[in-house]
Image (cartoon, rainbow, N blue to C red; front, side):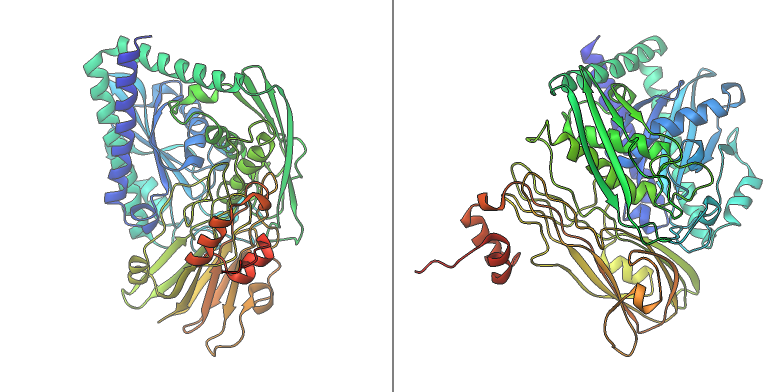
Length: 566
């Protein structure tokens, strides 16, 4: 390997992907892109292998290789021409869930196909039975909106008008979707142009040899990491609390087999697929395993298909981790992915206690809504998520108010949220005493209170951890559960949606009407603690008291704290 050239090209490919992401962020219409940055941009070779990716959304990073490979197989190379752009969002063709749209532009150099520029983004409105796409009571994939197989949305540089008409006719916000799709197309066009320039600079032979060397190098680095782990079978399991249809938990069971330089993640002990939208499809089963292993290994390993080669996945069909068509699966990539990744981390804590960490909040507290906003005389839709707490680590407390393990997204700022949507955010805070205690405690729950203004709003939710606490690790305590409460305009008592609207699940439901003046309070779960509570230094408890993270009552209850006489 020419290590110098390889490192230069690797850095260049990553920089290209970052530029693609900035293009999306700066040109998109919806807050999920221009504020939340819920997208990933990457580059692939002609075989559909990922050769470069930027540091955006982890679930999409792990899912990109499968959707790219399946698309490259379904559409023959002979059908692709310069100027083409492909779009797909089909979870049963390698995608992750219906909101996640993948735009792919073939990269040509001197009339020959050399690879692909790829942008995957969570589109806020995809049609279906609820505004925002997350139908907490969906029972089949057809409830989740328009499902698009790999098709050309641009051909030879020109729009395919029929495809545009079909896609925009099936959503509630065609203007916003049009702008977001244009942003994604602009992103892959930037990526394709930059990748073509790299090929021109180094020549085709050097470029192809170097990206092959780069993937082999990543594979070698990952194998070396795994070789340092003790061989064995490591088992762990956790649960999704319900599926929105039936009030029962769903088991996620993982056996991680470490064998020499490879890891086999076996999901065979998991429950059969659910009726409701918590099912994962194959790409989610893959990306969850990749995500967990990337968090437990050297972060300097270049992220490409090579580093995934030593990680094998066994995911039997018909289970909650590899559902059969036409099962509903919109919550799989957003909620179930988190549970899968942490179940693997929990298993690996048995052999890597110095690298593992307690579970985060375990949910994005996905809150979806749509309404005709009289302030702009337009129908608006939003996919809103609440910041999560991260679990305690071997060396520090958990991080406060960031995205869950499968996201790298940003919260919509309050000022932007209130301008764009018919809500007033009355309170937004961290909840004291909500973190799991431990030698290193977890982070605290985030809560916010919203009041509907001006118009009736249709809301839905796909969340979790409202009844099952986020677990602590190696003696650490569990974090607090989350909640979603409603208060009528008259200012009555706060009620869970199960009581106020007769829903089966407190965390997953569809199409609830919120009238002006009514309030909704969302509370994310707290995170688990790491290590025995008795080992937390007293000065750290005192500091938490002084900072208001815990109350005196909480310190006494969780840590056995007693005031010393002065």
